[in-house]
Image 1 (cartoon, rainbow, N blue to C red):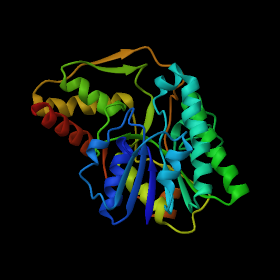
Image 2 (cartoon, rainbow, N blue to C red):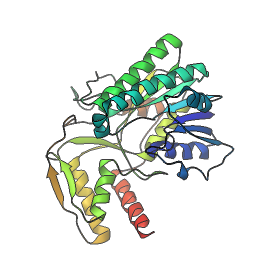
Image 3 (cartoon, helix red, strand yellow):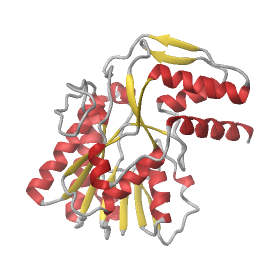
Length: 314
């Protein structure tokens, strides 16, 4: 299979590309490298990988990437809540208009399937826990709104143009990938703790989140690409639900084991636009795609700590 990946230079995208290449697929990637970095992919098999620096809002860049591909994984986006709030016009332009441009290019180039990388942020405050895919979305922040708009755009193209799609709603992604991001709550805690700083928790820390390892996310995307009979389906991708306080204590405890020093935990005022309680029902993806996460939180935290320590010594 030849797969196009938007946002392929990023944290999840580069990990996905590495794994797709290892499974024998060929890949074309489009990324503006504002946040990502292609250097982690440049030593890969040049015959099976094409790296394009460009913008998903540019039709020529998209056509160069999608030409001759069977499917596209669309994950290029402004994904940080604060970044979206600080520059809402750019967030809408990239996440909504950019998705429209990807869909137009997919139709124009005869792409068979679009995998849209969505988010738990579309749900907002759940009416019931754990959250199932059929529950009505009520996003609380601009990022969630733009992801929901992307889902609706894809659904419209599916209904009117016959474009085949799969929506994947990610939980909180963490873990060491090919290119590792330090933006999520777990990597942030690890970085702060190993730098001798206190772990900062917003609010009382009792907010619950569903965490999932980047390697498990990559496997779920691959299943979405290759599984037959799932056109038009939406899946939650999560693993373990826990509170931010428990995550902070887990990170602090694991850092103490390797450094002999236990980082302190401090609390800051809560941030607006964030859900208090959240947990995923993942029975649909388990039953339909056969997906079960392989990574447990404690193992993933230890992996990030080891990775950070190793890179600090270089």
